[in-house]
Each structure stands twice: as C-alpha cells, then as structure tokens.
Amino acid sequence: MTEPGTRCYDITHRTVYRYSDDVTSSYGRGFLTPRDLDWQRCLSHELVIDPDAADRSTSRDAYGNISSYFHVTERHRTLSITSHSVVEVDPPAPEYYSGASARAPWELARPVGGDGALAAEFTLDLSPPEITDAVRAYAAPSFDPGRPLIEVLRELTSRIYADFTYRCGSTTVSTQVAEVLAAREGVCQDFARLAIACLRANGLAASYVSGYLATDPPPGKERMIGVDATHAWASVWTPQNVWLGLDPTNDQMVDERYIVAGFGRDYADVPPLRGIIYTDSESSVIEVSVDVAPYSSDRGGPLRA
Image (cartoon, rainbow, N blue to C red; front, side, top):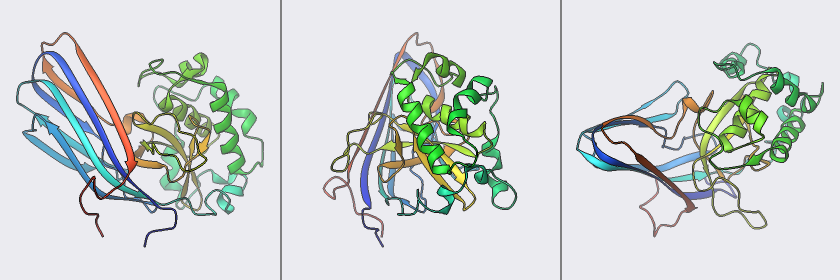
C-alpha cells in the first residue's frame, strides 16, 4: 500500500564520453540502479549503452548495492550510458527524527554487540586516514556529552552548510577531507565525507550515500543544490537499526526527495561510473546530466504492482 505523501519519480541519468581518437575497448562498472529499501522501491530500471555492449552483467556487492558491468568492443569515439528508473519514495515516518533513537544521547548510538556488530565497520577510518586532529577539533563543538543525537546531527549539518562554500570544480573524487577542511569549499561528496569523518571521530557508524535529489521541491521548499548530477549525503546508524540521513550540502535532514542508488563506507564503494579504456586518444570530454521528475504514465511503461 502506498503511504500518504509517497512520491514517484522518473529518473534519467545520462553520461557521455567523447574521445579525440578511436577507443577499441571500453570496460565500465557503476552503481546506477536505485535500491529497494523499506522506504524506497525501484519499480523499473533500464540501462542503455551506445554502442551496444558485447558483454554485460549485474551483481550485488557486500552492502546489497546493484553493480552494473559492461564491455564495449566496437570501435567508437563517443560512448553514452543512460540509466532510466522509476522509483517510489515514502516520506520519513513521523517518529523517524523524533523517536527514542534520535532523542537519546549520541553516545548511545555507538555500535556495541548485537546488531551493532554489523555497523561497526562504518566506524572505521579510511586509508589514508581522514580522521585528523583538525577534523576532531571541527567536530567537537557539536558533540557535547549527553546531547541528543538528533541535535548533534542537525547542528553538524548546519555548521558545514554555513562554514563551507559549494563550488563546482574545486575538488576531485580523490580530494582528501583535510584539504576540504582547509580550503572551506567543495561539492556534495566532500561535505558528506567531512560529516562522516566528524561522526566516526566520535565513534559513530556513518555511511556515504550516493543517489539523486528531486528537482521539483514540495510547496514552500526551495530548489536544492546538486540536482544536475548525482548527489551525496551521509547516514548515521542507531541501535534500533535505523539509519538517519543528513545532507550538509543543503542543511537538510533526508526526506522523500532523496533517492538512494547505493551506500558504502566511502565514495569509492559506490561511484556512479568508473572504467578502463584502450585508445590513443589524447583528449576526452565527459558530459553528465540528471533529470529527476514526477512520474507520469505518459513518460514510461506500467509500474510493477
């Protein structure tokens, strides 16, 4: 049964690579299929590759994300990958951000035993380390002893939003959190990773989430940043086995406007696309476009029951 306030989205994610010389072989892998979750249902998904792939497959990783693999052997100078999905997303339950797990002291959300063992790996630092003295110092004002977890999350989200400038092209996927912290600018993946480092520095389990933002905000809400590409945010585990989502790029707790494609410990676990090509091309250009629109039966086929 569809929940009141459930939204249905038609998502088109297109990536085009253009090369100055022939590519003789192109291998690619990406996380482009939205997840099926308690609050989200991927009703349909299609991945179109041009030129056609000679070999392709899908698999699930350790976190349950769907990974798509393809190998194009036809010579080409342009490669396009278009993912088209129809997804339903329920609004957060009323108690999602106000229930016991959110109102309890943040220290109690540290994973210990039981279900916490499954979340423990999300407390671990990366390699090279992201949890530095500078990260600990930046996080500290939000983590007063005994403070309710939801208050910690909201303040940390708001502080990153206020302290950092969103600037396209200021970072790459390999930019370290320490560099972002020093420059005070970046994009959504940087702000998500900074929040995650702050949370892990205090023993909390935090995941990196890759997905999409709706382009049509509900009445009274402003259009948010990140809608022309994939978006990234963070989630924090609670002992009730609930992940609370926060988006420091937009000073927003996650709601029905967010569509999850995949999650892991870091960006490297769930990149939208990565690959290897064989070519003598001296230059290349990549174009990425994302459209997240309200679903209409005029735009797509029938929905799954």
